Image 1 (tube, rainbow over the protein chains, first blue to last red):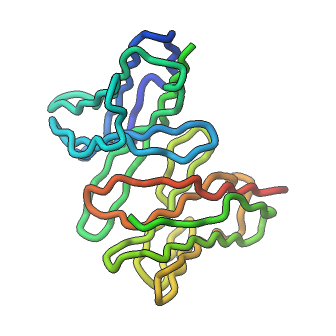
Image 2 (cartoon, each protein chain N blue to C red; image 1 turned 90 degrees about the vertical axis):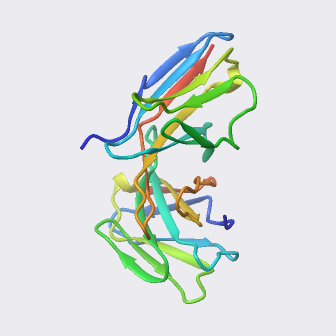
Amino acid sequence: NAGVMQNPRHLVRRRGQEARLRCSPMKGHSHVYWYRQLPEEGLKFMVYLQKENIIDESGMPKERFSAEFPKEGPSILRIQQVVRGDSAAYFCASSYVQDSFYEQYFGPGTRLTVT
Amino acid sequence: LAKTTQPISMDSYEGQEVNITCSHNNIATNDYITWYQQFPSQGPRFIIQGYKTKVTNEVASLFIPADRKSSTLSLPRVSLSDTAVYYCLVGLNRDDKIIFGKGTRLHILP
């Protein structure tokens, strides 16, 4: 059973370009979460999605950022017109919820560098 | 979600037992306590979760006193590969987002 897959692992974009990050959850998982991590910082929640629905986007910047999790295919985090401050590691997690036990499985992350 | 407080960093030596304590004074009745581990350049990895008393798995033990206002992650006989950041999280329920603090940077010395 493959883990959470993210691609690309490293992405370099010039200011003003678009960045598109992909996340394939673990097989059987229908919950996807995106987090951003700056150097030496903890992870910050961005958005929580289920298939074709955004459940919680309270951590997502209001402009330039969007996320989707279509019925078929991976979840996509899109950053338009990137700026240097968007440089960070972006992690995706997926979950399988049982009654009394809760765990999120994280992918290896995408490291975005904006030049 | 309950706020957590844990040491910013800790050093220890190979072969020793390491205990990392987390304070969560405002823990709610239904809250679980969860610990994640993150190695450099990797995503966090679930270590252990508990509600009360003691939980043990192949990686660690989690001790939770009766009042549940704190918890202690215990790593037996650490090795260099246990060098990582350890996050204490409280209040994970179905559909909850995870609120990560800065965690505890554990550095194991030879």
